[in-house]
Structure formats: C-alpha cells, structure tokens
Image (tube, rainbow, N blue to C red):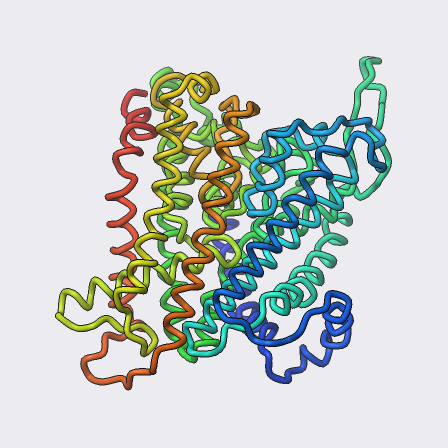
Length: 555
C-alpha cells in the first residue's frame, strides 16, 4: 500500500510537468498571446508605477538588475528583523533579532535557502512573517524563474529580455495565482490563517499551554510552490498546523515538484527541441527514483544495532519520523525536498539512518536532481554542456550545443561555476571543523558530527535550508559563515551562467551535419548521467566516506 501511494504521487507529478512547462513558456513569451491579454493590463499598471521600460537588456544589464534588486531587498528586510520589537503586528512581544541572526535570516530567505537558525513561531513577529518572509518567498522564486528564462532565451539565440518584466510576470502569472488558490485549499484542510495572538488554553490535566498560531495558510502555499521551505513553526511541516493530514502532505509534495519538473519541458518548447527537454527530464527523474528507492531500502532495514537486539520497528526506522505518515511518506518527502532544493521537512533529517541521510545530502551535493526553481535547471544545462565538451574531445570535434560552438570562454565560465559549489562546501566545512567556534556546535562527535557540518554548508550552498538539526548553529560564527556561503552559492552561478548564455546568443548558428553530436538521444542522456556522477563522485566521495559511510560501517 505504501509503495502504491508513492507511485501514484509521483505519477500525478509527472502528468502535471508537461502542461505546466508549456504554460511557463507561454507566460514569458514577449509576443502577443492570450496570457498577455489577461494579465497585460494589470502588469502595465505595475510597470508604470515602477518606471519599468519594456526594453531588452544585455546579459550584463540583466545580471546587474537582479543582483542590485535582490541586495536592496536583503537590506530592507534586515532592518525589519532588527526593528520588529518596536514595529506593529507583534502581539506576542517578540524582540528584534540580533545583528548576526538578522544578517543570516535576510540572506537565507532572499536566496531561497530558508535556513532557520531560530524557532519560527518564537523568532519572528507577524509583521516580519508577512512583509519580510512572505514577501521574499515570492521575490526569490520570481528572481530564479526570470533568470532561467533569460538563460534559455540566450541559449536559443534570442535576446535575453528584461529582468523587471520577467520578475513581475513570474509573480503575476505563476506564483501569486497558484499560491492564492492553494492557500484556500490548505485553510480548508485545517491550516490556521489568523492574526490573533498565541492562544492560552487549559489542558486536560489542568495546566496552561501556549499554542502558537498565525497567517500560516498563506505562508504554506508559497513555501512549497516557490521551493522556499522555511517553516512558520520550528518543526516545519512536522507540525500539525503546517501539515494537518495525509492530503496536505500529498499536496505539499506536488507543489515542491511542480515547477522544477516543468522546466525541462519549458526549455524544450523555447529552444524548439521538445525531445531534448524530455531527455533532460528523464535523466533527472532516473536519479530521483534511484535515490528514493535506495533511501527507502536503507530506512526500512533500520539500524543494524537495533536489529541485532530484536527491537527494530516493523515499519522500519521510526526515529524522528512523523507517525501520522509513516516511514515511506517521510522518506518520499525528504528526498523530494532535497531534490527540489525546497528544504521543508516533515521528519528530522538528523535522525535518518546514515545511508538515507547520505542520499538526501547527495541530492544537494549534485544539485542537479531537478533542483530548485530555475537555478537547479541551470546546473543541469551546465552539466549537459560539460558532457558535450567531453564528448567532443573524445572524437576530436569542436563541441556544439544547440547549434552553437562551445569554446574556451564558455568552458572557463562553466568550470569556475562548477568549482564554486565544492569550494564553498568543503572550504567552509574545513574551517568549521578546524576552529573551536565551529567545532563546539557539533552535538555528535565522530563521523556523524562531520556529516552535520557538511550537511549545514551543503544545504547553504545549494540554497536548500534543511539541516541535521543536532548542530548548534544559533551562534554568530554559524550565522555569518552560512550567510556568506548562501549568498555566493546563489548569485555567483546565476551571473556566470547568464554570461554563458549571453556569449552563446551572440554566436552564429552552425548548420547541423552528419557529424553533429545530437543532444536529444538516449545516448546523450546516458553520457549526461555519467558526467554528473563522475564529477560528483570525484569531488565529494572522500567527504562522504569520512561522514555517513564511515558511520554506517561502524554501526
């Protein structure tokens, strides 16, 4: 029954992917379409208020616009967090954040990481939740969607577009309508939506209990749809107010998968090669299925030490799992949230068996298993270009991608982009493990402690936000270091890959010949998968051996 429910969940996600992908392509089409007629009048008002001129930008202008706009938003919400103690809509009297935590939280939510070094219900006022957190939960995926669409336009030989136009369209045509509808659905399922303060109730035993509540329904829908992942409550979607029942759990999984699985079909439509989009989708889906199946296998085997004692639960390892959903749905959620770079959790990842924890970690290390809204798909295309380049070297031909030659300039940008991810993760982890300020946060000495540190920085660099929550990360060291990693992990790759797209857009189209290496075949899909795993293994396998693999072998 558990396997059947997982298969049906994924089947629906697959069926939604293609129509959603086509809709995305139409939503960002600058030509006259039905969507322009529907949303155009409202958007024109926004353009007029913002002084936005609908003119095409160069890749440099596009990149500067997104970086400066996002930087302004980070500064704005930083001061909201610092001053929330004296601002309105704070019925619980929550104090302003300290500088390091406000710095971390502002960057965290603007980069789509949503790493939370505070407890959601006690760390932020209603005002901070609504005009800072909720605002960034729309702005962040809108930024990523705008950039990936501009990136694909460049690959297809078209003009990059305009960042502000794409940003507004992402909100008005995709994020806001879907989040609005799903917010009502979640409220109907039992998710609270109120501005009333924390409720004080009397328990059956006669004691008093404080029950936190707030505008959770609106928060929850964009949290999952935008691959944000930050929880209104500290325990995220393991809290019954954020995830009341099996239906809400199912809807959250679908929302997390909706946009990342659709982007390959958007890409295929925009570049005029639907088959190539399907190949990319199937390649990512295969990794997802292998990781999911392996995680389920390891989790149902449970802890070898408990198995020997004969006290293992018959439903697998239930430590840290949500008892309402069981091991199967908990693992499906964990693999989905790390594959889509969402970061929401309905189970504590620190309590996963070592190999299951390694697979959630691997999703973020590879950062190509669908990935978050926009940025993850750009990583997939980056690896596709690497695969084409390596294939070209093997046969002695200049590599081509979408009819454009990939030369030294593009490969240098791609190489630097690819190296930044492990540099941030491994460099920051080494500093944390070497210095007392980082080492003192580890709650589990030994191999699991290494996993905790690497997971924290991997989650930050991949803009995921989930964590091995045994780590004592609520300190200035962790707040500042992860804040820097999150910022560089987000914007460095976006800018460099825009540069790649801008470079390819300026090149002449090369006619296809019999010697052209096709990128819309199963052979290319196999080479792409091999490239992802070989590069990932060479980069991160030693670290995995020191962490989760060593922990597994010593159980």
